[in-house]
Length: 484
Image 1 (cartoon, rainbow, N blue to C red):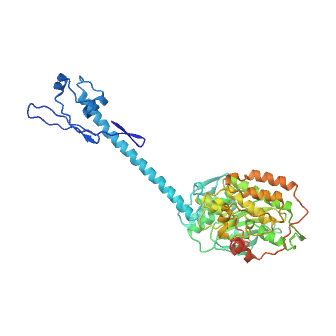
Image 2: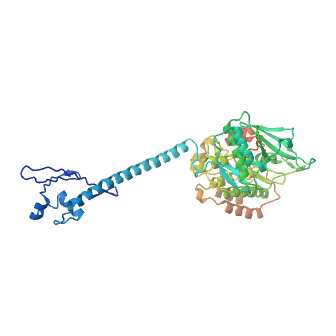
Image 3: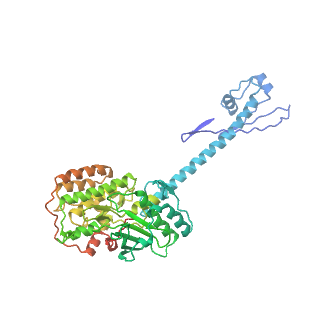
């Protein structure tokens, strides 16, 4: 018979036939056991049964079996059919048992995966959509394909990757021997130097990023992976451009665009001193120019979004500025990590005061978090580089935001710009404006913005005090060209 168990129907019927000869006349006795209880039903020979027309009560198991098998009293093949029925029952039970075990295994696997995700969240790794975990390699016709960076020797890895990066290779003899050290970090030194082009009278200023030696296989793979990632990313006016590389042998070089005025945060601090010069002329920042810089940052973020990426650390310290106020978004290390490994590593520290609530709660990161950080960037620009939430300790920022508290309007900020900031700081990420909507609102606001009155903040910045209030390290304030 069929018994419903937790929404599934299983055939729960076990049969056993025991044959024995009676002492009186060789009568054959069939014994059947059904379900959870047993009842003995003695049935005489088939011929005697047909003569007498007697059958065990329909309530017993023998009668139920005959009903299921549709056996009539005159059917001489009933015994055969019963045997066929038994042959069907056993495989059915086995298949049903297998399906149950398979369902249990799948359930345990899914539960384990969820437990691992929760564990990653507790360790400071924000879950993100799955990545293929492969590195970029240039295709033969300007396209790109994925190839895995397999465990191999450094020499064979360099040989393979150098062929893939053939269009970016720069002969080392084209680089000047005169190096100006900009920064010396954990991954290697960063220099400013000259790269000789076709015109000897006009060498090109570039930033040279050198992989620290001795470098193991993992470090070489990571350095090459970043070059390949940036190659695939392509060119955009508002992203720091990759100028070339030297990867045929160690040490490995990455050549980057040299941006004249350095990072935006230092530029804003200099504007406080009334001594900022551009091409020898005194320079000040106006409200309209804040909109101009903000619009360029949004263009860079839209470019990343079209590549199914997000930045993850939008801040004035991660924007480089040229003499004509062209903004260049840099600091794409987190975007590379997420794309290559599928998760934000716990070692990648982003200052808490720039993070959206969902990032602080270790939820999935995305472009909506960049929109929140863009509102912080507007605050930085309009205050000429003031730290966000100056009255809140960095470790208390989540509790501050959970009370639905945001920064007050600075005295140098007009209501229109403050309205843009507040729209970026909505708690629910779905209620924040999209990049395109924000871009449109910035363009409209820029039309009526003041281009005459300059932003003025009398206090000068003490970098050590700024770092303590902002919750960032002094090392992150150095001019490091951290494009990746």
